[in-house]
Image (cartoon, rainbow, N blue to C red; front, side, top):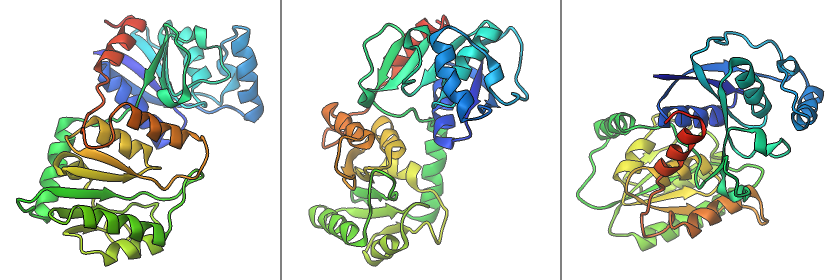
Length: 310
């Protein structure tokens, strides 16, 4: 199997996208942490990149990094890895692939860039626009999740409506009143269905209390129970509602399963990336009654060609 190095900045959301990409292009991988020596050294990386210097001296010592000739690609997600992927790839004689938009760096000198569509990346040969976050999931993962869910709860013959609730962030809010309004609308419009819900570690306590007050057939309150019903929700629910700030969860729901996916809009006003992300999903037809799913296979095929791994 083709071997890759994944450079990680320690952020799980970034690392998971790199893993998803490596698996999708058939690569076995080693995960290697990377960190700039300081903010100043990160600033220097933009200048070095512009003038064609690729130096690993801007980083703290990189430990446990394979230095073998069979490494074919170095993968990085997030600004802490973009320059490092180029520098390490040059050292190893490998190709580099980065995920998210490497704003400020020399775009032309990357071998492969997978950039979110909401960043409106330029149309270049080495840039692949992707409509969703990459998700490291596979069929056995969902099968195990469905089995675990059924060991706890036996669904009826009715269609299921599932709700996945995240929490506020810098571009979104979440109040108890807003949650009550959204849940009342869901129950009123789907009265003939079963109703399932899960909160998350980010869900505020007062919002969890509102959720707990509704007559869900299956209810997971994260502060009391850490079981994960989401794989079953994705595979089994006819309708799946996800709070709009949960871009990773929306990406998974719009990529796997057969649910009709809807975003519960808790986003702040303004043209921020979360708003653009949801709007792009709507425009592509991944949200709403169609149940259409994002097919990334043509994009991965193009990435394989850019990386010389066909």
